[in-house]
Image 1 (cartoon, one colour):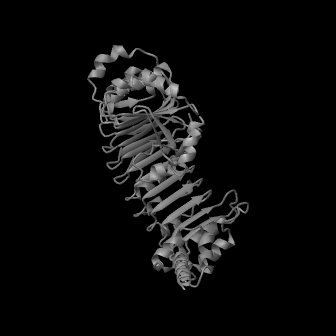
Image 2 (cartoon, rainbow, N blue to C red):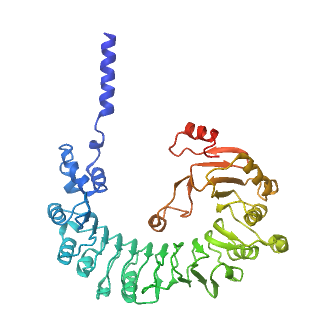
Image 3 (cartoon, rainbow, N blue to C red):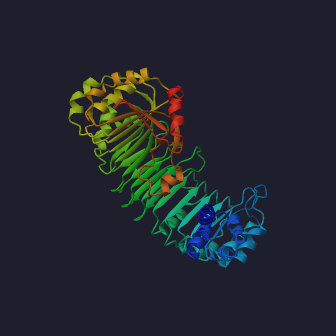
Length: 481
């Protein structure tokens, strides 16, 4: 008898575990879940049960389509029209790519954007569109919050003054053809814009001018060709701008006239180094860093990539960015010079750095001297990380670094020095996320699987989804050391 009661109890508990608790959620929550699924998966939820049957039609539409017949697994052509005609709306996201097939797309795209299902559309993504139907975009512009235009042609657009995007917060312009006047009008039509990505764009104008009272984050890649390329970015008035990210490409001048809240800057490069102007000062390659005179007190996070540094340049960087808290340096090579001759200037510095990352560290004499400078003078340093070019190192190598860097003389006794392999990387941000995800407080941070904590002579292991025992065994076998 007792055994029978126990069996029924087990059965009841099993049924509770297997119960469809998701279906008991409110319609609004389930609708949000469906709207985040790919188009076909969202439509397939109708066959799960009678509870789900009406949800796809009532949930905000998430439609991702491609007109290229070579692409499988996403709606195309007639399917797009059928979905839009059968869904009552509203729509959360509409993404369409034409690939290399532009036939009859004017009528199709314009008709789709005028569909009642796309009323109150929040996200629009157009890719490979050779002609953007202005009037159709204007119809949905008042509700858009996110817009991405990739490989699109705006040179035929004429009615820029009719644009109005009062709710748009994220804008990405990637490999587009656009005139200077239309770009200025587009940005002026976005009073709530918070993040802007400009990547490899072309036009018949030499510069891009930014005037925005709302922009918080800007990302720029100048591209690798010189064909009708924008040569200068002017931040004329951006009182809320906190993040200016330079992703490389050909040389581009960056003129910052007014950005009092600029908090994050980088990556500044030595090869094809974009010039950064602030007021009357100029940085043009690392050979000019030593002659900078302006003090940019707002910048707290700075990233340098492939910059050739000498002691005088490092000292001047600390003077020009006196409130730096995080410094990322991707080392290409360093000038070998005697740091002792700068000792008097070093003593007058108040270095507030809390985190320093030296990437591509190879233990060259000049690199060791650079690291020793920060270790000996950064009084509030909490972490110094060395990203090695080596896949593995030995304990003897770590001991030698301990001696060369004179860790016992560090200015901040609480500082932790970590050595990590650049090959054991488990997380970093995409460029889109670095620009548009404002919750990311440090877009240059990279996550490594394991770290040798040198200053405290202990091994810190971060499993990050991996088996801790597996990592320990690997370390003991010498796979990571």
